[in-house]
Image (cartoon, rainbow, N blue to C red; front, top):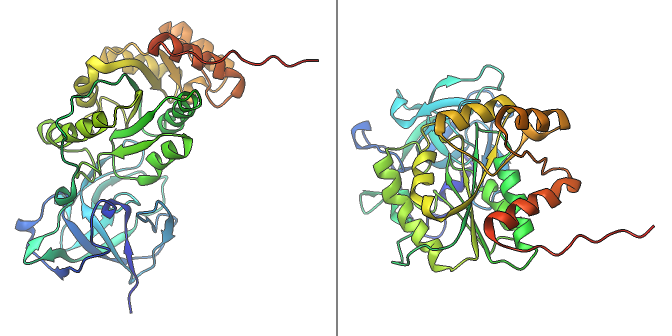
Length: 345
């Protein structure tokens, strides 16, 4: 008997509690956001793992059935793939969160991705079960909170870690912090780290019904605006937003910045290296308030960022550098942190 694993892109749905049928459909009826079943095939590697709706990671073995959703991914450092590239039912897990498609380009430094075979769509009363069926609805509430926007030069540039640090710092002074990841490819553990850091509520584009934000700008805005309205209805003191990848990649990071532009009070750029800071600033006409991430790992890197761009860089992984980060938040948000305690000799 095969083991059935439910991936985290299903966390907004009711498929765990209510019955459904599984039926193969012709590809002409497929679309992004469809919930489907894939049977694990191939030889397991380190990437044969699935993130469950709890955020916990479990191993997947050949013969297991995994429930995920069709989607797209265009990751600069890992792989590019799409549900529309699936041929003969052969597909891959584009992310551990259960975004399914077929890779067309994969980094050679990574293990082989998890291979799957399409086994059918989830249906109720003959209709496909889709992520959009469970998407957050708008509340009509106009969003008005100040926003700290964390953007990167690429994936793996320290955005989630930096955003969680900022959540922690603001929550520690009693602020009601809501945190969200508005662009990227579905992975629940990223925003769970925001909750662990002290956010009162967390959201991402999965809540809006998208497996990833590699969609048209029109489709992205139509789905993300109800989510922004929902966050506004919670009346946070501040919203911390992470944009996955960089604003120049096809994840709609630029559209997210434009949508929230009138509310953005602080822009944090997480960069892979000092030269990437200059590249993104020039290409996107972006002037961040501070640079974090690997580009601020050492004093040499921090000095080079300042020399190349004139922008303050802070190693937010270094506890001794946190007072500088607090100063940035104070000047941009108008908040006040208690004075640092001096140690007695």
